[in-house]
Image 1 (cartoon, one colour):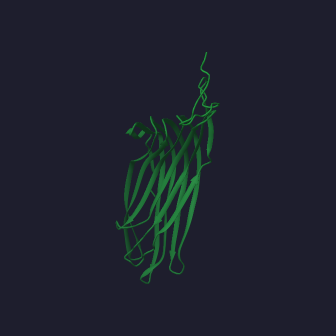
Image 2 (image 1 turned 180 degrees about the horizontal axis):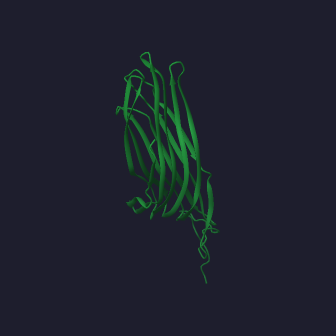
Image 3 (image 1 turned 135 degrees about the horizontal axis):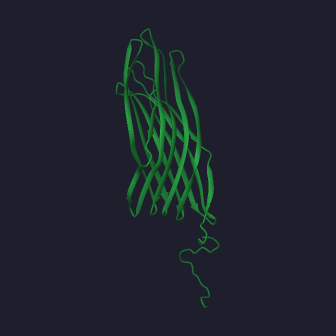
Length: 273
């Protein structure tokens, strides 16, 4: 296990023109404390593997708050690599030496979908402890068990939209264990927060949700003698959805109580004073 604490707040994920819109996405707060987990053990007898166990996963605490804005309507997404590490490792299963490399990568990204201009901030913090335990025995074959713990809290958002908008921001940790540089177990975990806002009669109606998604793949091929094939584990955890309404400022002309006019409609009225 190799614990890492990363603080990459005030990071610009994207700033530039996308068609007629200028897009700015920034992580105001971005703190991640994560501990990648990769362990393997086995017993070799009579020329073959009798037992093999593996554990792969991630223990992660995170706190993210993002600000996203666009001057015009668009649908756009972008990601950015933050950092990465690697550690070589070696062990033996009976007479069989096993060497490999553990790689950890961290990146962040966002997606925005809005028919008009939008400015929003949103954030969440939480923790996740997720791993999948796999065990192989000659007599019974493969067995696996998922261990899951998680908790969440949402931060109050702010919005300014012309009609409606939705956005999602995530921080992603990837763990790859490569054996002999060919194959091995891997894990990917996302900490995300997403929001949606719609302009209504009383103000801007909004909802925010956050959570984790995690997936694990274990794939080994040792000298073509021990070849367990793909074992997948997937998990999703979602926080309680927060929602509310931001009232229109005093004196703002409310967009309600008026007849809606469509294309090709005829309008008539008395314009005399």
